[in-house]
Length: 115
Length: 112
Image (cartoon, rainbow over all chains, first blue to last red; front, side):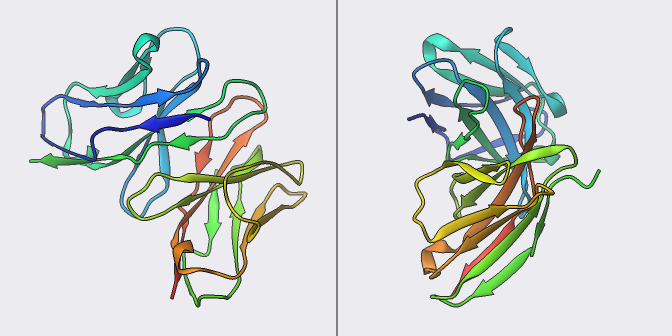
C-alpha cells in the first residue's frame, strides 16, 4: 500500500521569501504524484501533478515540484511567497495504471505568511 | 461550468442517525470518489463509483455506502452515525480521459 509523509506540520515564511514543502512517498513503482492546496473551509485545488517525463513540473500560481526517484520525494517550491499563499498544502499519491485512481494524502503542511 | 457541487454545505446529526450527502460531478466527468477529512488530517479515500458500481473501496466499514445515478451524480450514505464520523466529506470527479480529479467544497458533518 502506498503512503505519503509530509514532515513539516506548520511552516511560517515572510512574504517574498522562498518556500519549499517536503513530501516523501512510499510505493512499489513510480506513482502518480500531486500537490493540492486547501484554503480554510474550502475544497482542494490541484496545484500540479507528475505522471511521467520531465521530473521538474510547473503548476499554477508560480509553484513547481521536482520528482526525485532516488529519494522518493516530490517537494513543492515557490521562489517568492505571496500573502495569499497562506493555506494548507497536501501531497498525494495514486497508483500507476489506467482505471486505478485512489488518492492517498499526507497529513498536510499548514503555511503561514508574515507580511 | 459549475464544477463539482456538493450538498448540503453543513449539517448536524445525532449519534445513531443516518445521513445522505450528495454530489454532482463536473460536466463531462463520469467517475466520482468520496473522501473523509477529519480535523487536522489529510483526506482519506472512502470509495469510487464508475458506471453506477462501486469500483474501489478504502478502509471504511459497511456503515458507509454509496450510489451513483445514470446522470453520474452520487450519494454517500452513513448509517448508525458515531461521534468519530464528524468530518469534512469531499467529493471528487474525473473524466474518462486523464486522471486529474476535481474536488467539491465539501460537506461539513457534525455528529453530536
